[in-house]
Amino acid sequence: MAGRANPRAETVQLDSESVEALGAFQVKAGLRDGLRGGGSISTEAFSAERVSVARVATRGLSTWRSRNPENFITVSIGVSGHYGGTVQGRPYAARDGQLNFVSMPNDIQDNLIGSEETVGWLLNFSCDELLRECKSLGQDDCPVRLLDEALDGSESFLESASQHLLWLKYAQPEAWHQSSIASTQAAMVSFVAARMLSCSDRLPVAALPTPHQLASYVDLAISYMEQSLTRPIGLGDLCEACHVSARTLQIAFRQLRDETPMQALRGLRLKQMRSFLLQGEDVSVACLRSGLSPTGRTSALYLNLYGEKPSRTSAVFDKGLFR
Image (tube, rainbow, N blue to C red):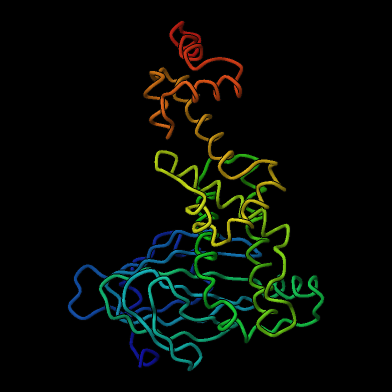
């Protein structure tokens, strides 16, 4: 059993971010037989009081034993690799892109690892925040034991939201990033609480998205756009990235930005195009590098947004005003 393993934790390398992200889990890990150079655990993590997320990668481990942090519920989602085990005696087997388990405060996790490398998500939700959200939805208690069932099928949304938090953490520190971080955390808590209550028949499954959820859908869609500007993007791609219907996403953009998702995408591409022009790029090249076609329509859209033609912006650079 993994719980009886004699892990050589001192030979497992943790980077500084892993130490911070996983410290509360009291991790102990054992190495695979014959491994040279020791094993490793690395993470990309976002930590906050309401929600913390970590994308954890392991190499060369055979076992992993940990205790869940006090006052936090942990959701585990598989990404790649073969592993499984028990959580407080309840068995699980990891599946790529699927929910592995939901761990309650102080639960013991005993994991057996069957592949050289593994990757997975650990999402921590504050019990206090979930209870507060349940009360805001009209319930005095929080049926956390239903989360395994409630979150099955919600992996895409949770992964997208987690990726968005990581992207915001490493992005340039702008004021709107802080607002987006707060709204994304709030949306994740609201989403989990609503799914939990709907599973207990205390909330209709078809309940309307909360304002926090709508804001998170917009943030996720914008993040996807910004990372994919040069690729063809359709409404279906945005819906898949946000794990919502086209109607819900359009409502979110209309309420929060007074525009459609595709209008927002066009604005981001034009903004990127202007940035390239101000760096001295040729107009045609700037268009293509921004996912736009070098046509008269693009020029007209640019003129309408910035009050000058692309060639004028390029000419300003040529005069040396931005050198």
